[in-house]
Length: 423
Image 1 (cartoon, rainbow, N blue to C red):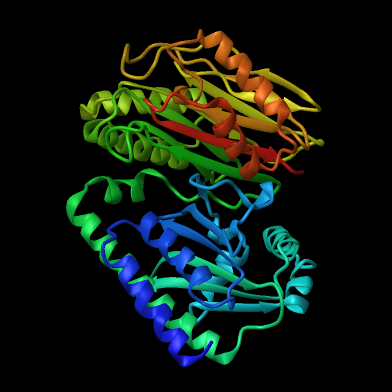
Image 2 (image 1 turned 90 degrees about the horizontal axis):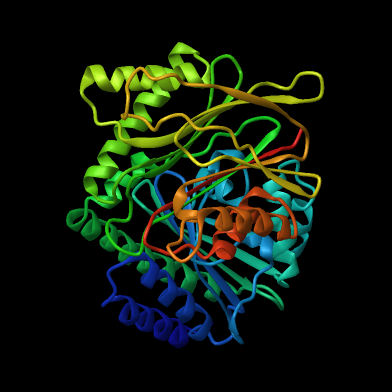
């Protein structure tokens, strides 16, 4: 890229970003400018927004010929997903890198397809399928926080040194705009700060692949009363939680945060069964005078034994989990106990079943299935059919597939947690 062209790129980018005040718009404009304004140096660009502690939203996929169509495995646009940065992949490599840039040529990408890390293998393979011959992953890092990622590629040849200098300048301009938008947003809104604590990072757990989604309602705060959680237990098991506090406002979000944190602490330190944990949670909230009006399902997956993992769960008024196995979908439908906060001290029951390799468990909040125009039974049946229609059961892909296929009303939050038994 010649000096004059680089100057045009940077001045044009600065002009594009100046009036924008949110990360989505900034990244979309930056991706578009990098493809349009580099005089064929950049053939395509993917832009991802990162939000704490572990969420990724794909906001732009642009090529010189228009929208860049991605393979399904790369995820749909505008869906929040857990990045599981601690579980490998190119994003984890970028977060750990001393500089906010990773570069790969064709040979290096091919070598990554042989990586021991499955995320890295998959990402390298999919990048090659998009024709990349030179790939740059540009981290938008302000201070110590990674705010977003711009992934740019050539499909014929390599970026020149002048290209690299221009793209470095574009990264700096975009990072500054993102950081300013973040600071302004934190001053204006409570929701961004709350979301950091309400949507936890997913753990890396041997033999189980996890994915989670949170989609806020179209109105109100970006967070509300729905939540998911997953964490390893000291005895070796894995806890899975899905819950829904009544309401969609700051009060519901604060109440949900209290319940989530108390449930985590009780489950981790007491080592109770799911039913006993929910009973202890309700007793604690009563004694501390914490509002506990919520549905909640707590499940544990015990370490593998004799070729199967034991699933135990207890439901406080929550919708039943969906189990996918060998082309069949069935709900683990049992009589749900009362929701939390209705009758403290009421009996909590526990259920169990074996999970086999290849099984997929789907936990969801009612926003995914409830619709004023349809009966709940019809929507649950649709959820089962939609899950079976998915081309494959990679949890990240399946989560996006379900959100698209269920076409939720948008008037309620949706929390979704998917767990696949790999071994």
